[in-house]
Length: 112
Image (cartoon, rainbow, N blue to C red; front, side, top):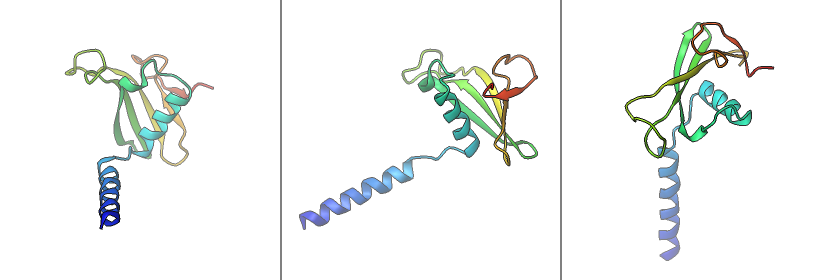
C-alpha cells in the first residue's frame, strides 16, 4: 500500500508540473535562447516577451520588454519595450531594431 501511495503521489506531481508549465511559442523561445546564448541581456530574469503571431504574413514579432516586480526593480505597472525581433516562420531568420529601438530600420539578428 505504501508503494502505491508513493507512485500515486509521484504521478500527481508530474502531472501538475506538466499542466502548470506553459511552453513558449516557437518565435519567443528562439529569441529568448538567442539572447541568452549570445549574452545580449543585462538581466535575463528581469526580461519578458510579448509575442504577436502573424505580425506580417509569415512573420511573428516578439517585443522584448523589461519585467518589473517579483524581485526585479522598477514599477510593476510599467514595462518598457527594449527592442523588437521579427522571426520568419519558414526560414527562422530574424531581424531586429536592437541597435536602435527608436528607428523602424531592422537589421539581421543576431548581428553577424
